[in-house]
Image (tube, rainbow, N blue to C red; front, side, top):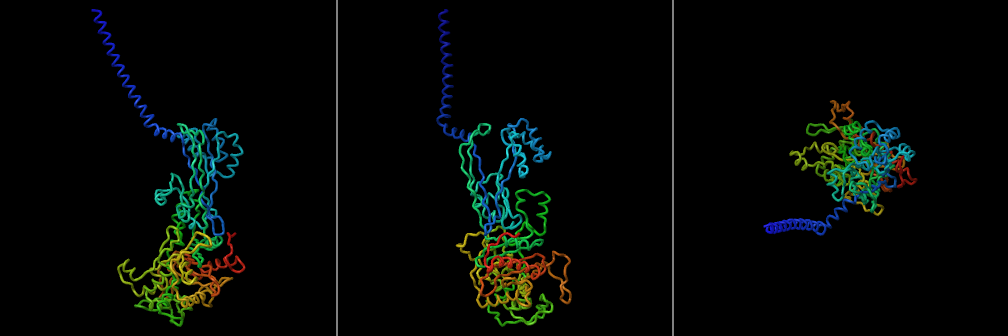
Length: 614
């Protein structure tokens, strides 16, 4: 009996051992299979993940390219910015260190409170920035005591610096923190949060060239992110320098002449369309976009009625006033409606459809031909001439000289102006064109709008024989071929008659700009006055002047020099002074100063090196 029970017990034990052994075998088989899968089948993938976790890629910013004027004067560069950082774990007492640093770098209580908050959320082996934008005095004081300030480091990075301050600010533009819109504009650039990018002007237009190529540093780190050693490094490639056509000296003269005023000055080389100066006032300091504005400063900037952030040279759209009489004269001659002997009588006004259209000179100019009509800016002469020509011929001539369309200069925000016609009015307003509107257009009023750049380009075309060049801002060297927007279509005989009238404006006894003749060369010009609001008049025709300064007319003047038949013109200038009153008194003096400065740089009046003033 016992033997039977013992036999049954052995069988039961063996059965249980088989079950347990089978279970263990199955478990180890599953474990072995999993290990095989992880180590053999997926080993490469996890090895790569481990390497990625072990290696930290740290970007190294590239120095942004400089921007220089045509003579090599630096307009925009990079300067070092020093900041103070502390590695908390290397200090014996963070609180005592901050107490020692407070008088050295003038930390406020709010800054100290902020430091302690950031300290709680940051690992102790990582640098904690204490203060940025250290002055040289602060850097010197820290360096003098650095041996006793455990854990303290001075970090340096480059920041954009506009060395001329407000000078050429609208042309150069500024940089700012990258936005989603910027990422869409530059899809080929891999931006990171906090990167800076060109926001306007040359900084924006040439972002890719100025930016350079970022470098990278490979650092070995442990699981907590502590750096162990550097593995390798790819150096950054600095951005390309940008050489502009702008002449800093001429630019500064233009800006100085507009100081305290609102307006714009554009100076072109009529031989190739290069922009020698482009000033817009009031201006702003692009360095503030990097340093930061106070709320008061920013609100003052954006609420200023003179729009300091706008580039008036390409965005300001003004009625061209009497400068447009050049277009009317050319249209009349090209349509065969006028020759050199054509004369009209000006009694001071004309009446059309029971409406009186006045000349600026209430008593009139008497009998005048084209030369004297231009010299004295006789409105009645051009009223009558425009009646003979018609608005559509005037519109065609205006477009031949670059009005009514953007010049593609390459700065964002350029405005096209406006040149009206019969078809334009039907399309935009659904009504017919009235004869009186042709008369108003003839003296540069009504629907007409132009930018200072367009007016400078128009005058450059008169100076060079009729070719409208695409204005250029980047100097690619003497071998650069200028791009042509419109080839010359001006009859040489018509051009010479027109030029005679424009020379008479400056050098004639009755010329509207005769008080501001340049000292060294002869010039040709045309004054203009454009209404801001419609003038009220006495019964006698006398204008009732407004007491509001912002109702004053804009003052315009366009000119080129030299204007002697034997000399090649080298400057074409347009000037707009907002609410300046009259072109002859507010704008022409600025042109004289620019021309005299330019031609005083060399004894023979050539293209001398013009450096910064002062």
